Amino acid sequence: MSIYVGNLSYDVTAEDLSAVFADYGAVKRVQLPTDRETGRPRGFGFVEMETDDEETAAIEALDGAEWMGRNLKVNKARPRENKGGNRKNGNFSRR
Image (cartoon, rainbow, N blue to C red; front, side):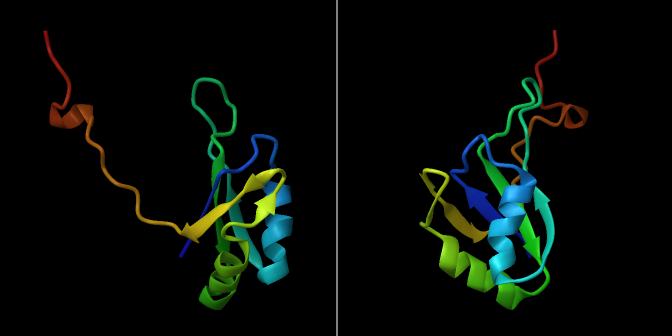
């Protein structure tokens, strides 16, 4: 399972986020997606922890908490939806 963390400051680092979640257990991985064109953080991230119990404790404690001047949105990450646009399937216009 993975945890979605939204409304992050654009100044946050993976190390910052890992340190906050480490209060609730062992952090396995932190991902902070960046914009493809600018390379800037996108304002959200994902955290994976060692156990489901640790993830649940972190979600309950951090959802709505203020951190770095922002109120965090923390919940279980949902699987990514396929929004189409796959060129191999012909989902683009041809001339």
